[in-house]
Length: 110
Length: 113
Image (tube, rainbow over all chains, first blue to last red; front, side, top):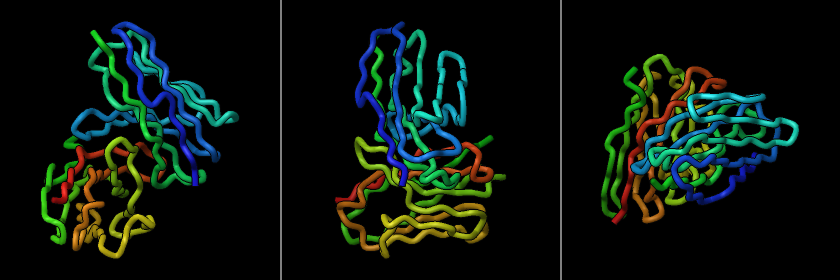
């Protein structure tokens, strides 16, 4: 089973700050997912990456396969970025169902 | 793209009752997943289908839980004789193949009185 650790659990930032959320996993994987969950439950897939870096708007995701570590960065953070950010990986390298971290609650204050 | 649709959004029921949730995946997606999420935790895998075949079930899926995807399109998740511990958000996701991103519905929040 793949264990997923996220840090920090909670993060409060001022609008405009650069945000970093970290994710570590225990077993080699084919790809890692970053997801965003807003109050009310809906989950949006932000990134699926297997190497290097991906960028979408103000969001950047990086992964280091050798170190089994990924980071999600938000540049110029905004209150609308407030949400729970979840890292997820397939268990044991399988590309089937996902094992999720417990999430990072981000609050961006105006 | 109508996205993944789940119904109902909220369900409140008394302990011991049966409940059924429905998930309509994105139409061309052959994979459908059910997850459960309790407060403050990340989602946990319950089961998944490839087309109409249920390929894997988690140990979390006790005998009181059953899931179906009879025609390889929509899926239902039934919980019989509900218990307090079943209170959670039940999330459905779909994907086109196992290597593609999963698209999530808004979930069904179940509250057991």
